[in-house]
Image 1 (spheres, rainbow, N blue to C red):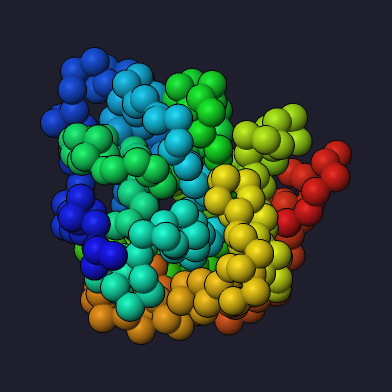
Image 2 (cartoon, rainbow, N blue to C red):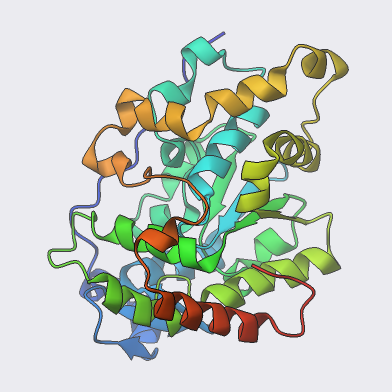
Length: 324
């Protein structure tokens, strides 16, 4: 059994973001016509109803135009800071459990975001050929809204797994992450990020529309999209991992269940294990690991803020048999 996949490699560190002037002309012309938010330290543009960081839009446009999924790809989708890191680790480990031993596993040497790359990231940084070097079956990820996904993904046979999280915890986790981004010389205050989040002016926002698109699509096509809640995964990880394995076509055998493999995978991919790995003890990867708890928003948000965000969430989800 090989120690690690020679095709996997750490993603490039982002010390500076591509400028719009460097963008291919066919994308630059469109991007410059999009509504923009000038107040943020990172420029955001509104595209197809959602706000995206301007430097990611060339990647999203290129992904829409040219990305071709393989039939056995698995796509992981999420709003930023909704549990993607954990979902990546679990899905990669479940899918490749016959390939890697726990003692010689890529997650011991690579961050989950290296093992499961974001598609639009590699297109934005003109590194898309790397995706083609990955052996099948690939596990790939995206923060794009469902309506922004390439038509090639939606019409393909590859399954999509979406994970969502309570908005107040998403906001707090999002703010803590952006304060650690190397290319942000003056990170925004929590109050500034709170107002932007409530108005939907964050990457992938508004969060409510992002979640609802995937939720309603999963109701219409449950064989295409598996909709997961982060809090339920934390509460019942065994049930969640078994649902995940069944959905992506990698069900556990009776012997695997009898030998406790599900529990071993959950332990191997636990927050503490991932956070304590040497590869994640640096600025580049450490920003993806903080607490991974439910309700941590209480340590950052005033009651007035929490009430405001709860009211917005309630209003946005009114009419749907769904709560966050």
